[in-house]
Image (cartoon, rainbow over all chains, first blue to last red; front, side, top):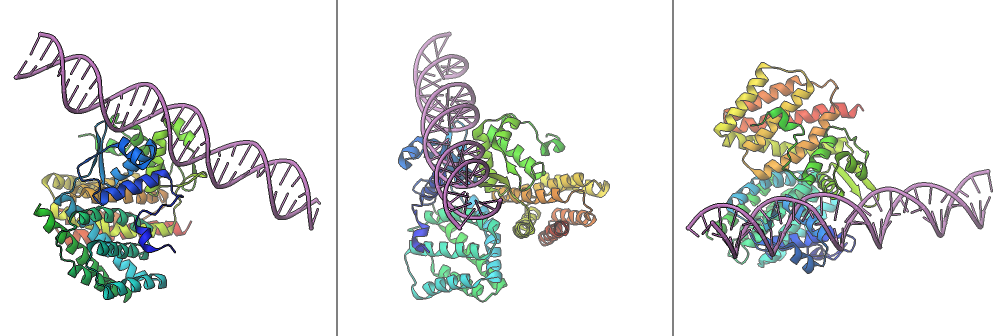
Length: 225
Length: 225
DNA sequence: CCCGCGGTATATCGCTCGCATATTGGTCGG
DNA sequence: CCGACCAATATGCGAGCGATATACCGCGGG
């Protein structure tokens, strides 16, 4: 198995196509705010920066457009989707029900392999209460994605992956602000314990609290801008 | 407003791009089983049948692949996704929570325009109990899509649209079989009444019953194949 | 005679490249 | 000052090229 830490950043897998490569790299830039919300996406510029032809870039942008990370207006240009409180609310609205259901399914269908993963993650949470936001963000990603896998539903997984990226960008937006992450940690631990205990109701409720709590924190920072 | 009956079939809107055109037409063929599950998708054939170049077809197929309506294997071919009970269960699993939540939101956010639409639909259900399955299918589509709109959440709407098409294909699969649609009618009416009454809990529960009931009917036909 | 294997043939695909087209913003003329 | 034309820009679409994986066929060995 590859190192988990590398699996999250841009691992140079030569097997994936240039379209996929372009998609992942541009998505990474958008989500991490390297490409700012509202800014124009220059196709030619991306082409020379990524050393990739025009078709793959075009396909990647179409894909990102359908995921609401960019907005393409014919013959006018492509723009990074702006962020606003309305979208935050709408995204959260969907995420709450989907993530909560995924947590329920994960608690229900937990395999021994998944159990080990969650146990390890819980260990990290309990022992090393990292205060670095980026590190916490990475942990949060791992937890969520592991839950998607443990839910044993590829459709749910891909849908949630999309919404997670939308949310992740919002998180990047409030990085370096003082958001209270103490409760998030508690939520995570409660969530993992519930899943490991096979307590579906508690896992679902815990995840619901976690996602709504996340929305509340982001909103606080977002409104004072 | 265009005639609703035409809005559902292939209306020739010259404004949409050829990619969109190709996507919609191929999707229609797949969902309606005109292209059979498991069959190969011949790109050249589609090109001459739709009188469309290669790039739009290619883009449409990529989009369909991401929506799980076709499966593309590099250098081997593209195939219409097969249907099976497992996928039915997984799709339903997601649909139940999303559709139920959409129904809840629709009941909560009902605008006067939406109210009129739902009232009209309810009238049709109460007065003309059509026994034609295709007609019922069309009505079901209208109801669901109207709920998506009434939920006032574009993200939820697009996600549900995707899952609805997956389910719609399954419905086509059991057409001309004797499925009991009497309860479906009752469910629809109860659902619409709940939404019109603004009863969120009942709308959610009603939709939940409706979707699970749908799955049960499809499953019955699917297992005896 | 049958089975396994290697090489070639073929079909498909990913990507590059170029042309047509539509929208915009600026400028020139009235 | 306003309206219309024009150039610039970016996209949509079409066709081809090289790469690659599979399938088939012929050959050699058992």
